[in-house]
Length: 160
Image (cartoon, rainbow, N blue to C red; front, side):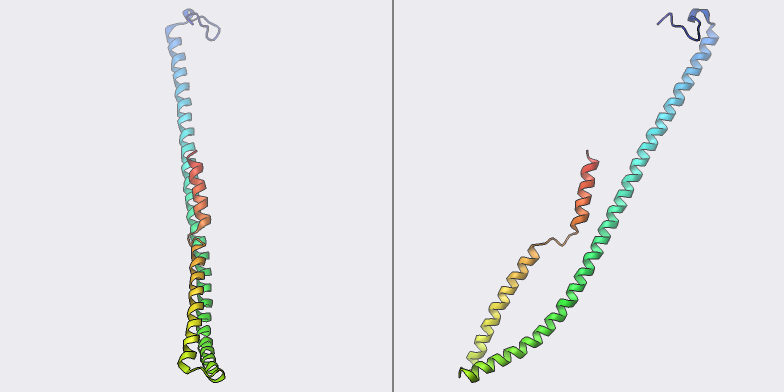
């Protein structure tokens, strides 16, 4: 390396000022390349941060959208369910009264026994429906599954 030739001349043939200028030029070149590399790394990191922020905003938007969708469905189901309960109650009261009187008049069962039979039947049906409702509620997750699955996938991707 001591006899390295630069620009067609041996180093010992050059004046110290020329070598100093070449060294200055080389230092400037290295400084420019390092600055460009730092700028590229900065741009890369900035781009990653921007993408991560955008992904987070999209996750939040997805969560909001899914929540509002579930809220609309819940509201609609509650409206129908409430109206159905009111109408079923009115109908059930009429039928209970009719069946109790039917048992009393047709089978000559005393009125209190007729009401007891009807009450027992309704109690049994009510318990069965309550158990079915509990099982239905346990069969689904009210949390926004799609959003949490996507978030979990994004988090696992970023840790790789």
